[in-house]
Image (cartoon, rainbow, N blue to C red):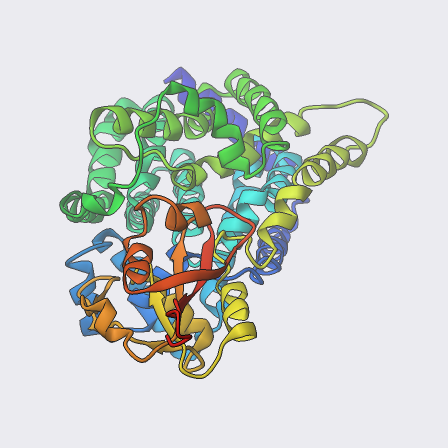
Length: 496
């Protein structure tokens, strides 16, 4: 077919341009990106990361199996990986290191994919833009599977390009394996597949597409189908997500880049890159463009037609396309006799500078919006012997135990571990607090959520048991953690 021949000609030209491409370039890109991500592991674990710890580290395999039958079954491949990984340690940075390595893998394959599509300059710039994205720093320092989803998306696109060069059985099997990997990272990561499917349809002979790519994709989607069925049965886990309107798409550049300053200009640059790719080779322009815009659009369609599901972290899988298309656009600027570095490098630095506020925010102790060490510091600064602690949401107990270990006030309500992330607790709070003059109440949310209204029932129960508020503290970010100290009201004769 004409499109396929044009792409193969383009591929031969790209290979000719890449004779001096050092083989270590992707490795260096991956190493630098991993280092950037690791530098953000100083933030406190978020509530979601604590869920990873609870599922994959704090339980034996039998407990993990019991958990995934209740909730988060579609995360089982990731949880199994972290379970094995945690045999060597449980520190914050160690639990997050797999995500940092995944971000590095994504950058390395992105560098080579950019080289294949538009030459060595495009590959280097794509990897550089990806490395400086605040979203990469966040998800690369996050003990959740979203960096793995981005890496799998890049690997699957890279293997598809290899198939287009030469559709051998080995390369097609590798493509099927990459699709399977994609489905095992996160359910919504497969929203990049329609773009790959369209690109394959355009670039390959029709017979090859129908008899080899379609079956390979179908086989690769088997793990996805199984995990999707499990996820559908556990969709109550995302019942907290609110429906969104089309206006949420305006925030997509911010969500993909992780910065409201760097996102929009980089998205505009990426659109230019997609147009350039379309002019060079329609199939790969369709791949890059579809990879960039289809995940948020399709996720919004699911949100409207199936179940509310649009969350910014679910579209991080499109971040590599943002960097790839941006790199292609920058590499296409040729201002003789201005050296290449004087064109591309300043733009990458500008993107990095625009993202600095978000980068700094993600690296604060409360950069993941749940400051467990800060909350513990408040308690320890004013704790007295005989104090009790009550959790507004029982699952918070895991985070406080992770950071506080045995150095916590008496947990008067705890009965044992529940079947999911929650704990079994006593329901006779007043009796459980008998003999305690002071009680600490902690919850996820603002002060107002607990101190006014009925959003945190535990607070109302503590007050009903005869305690009054002494002081309250809240972390700087929302929703964040609130710590409140209540003391038993004294009677007129001065006794508690």
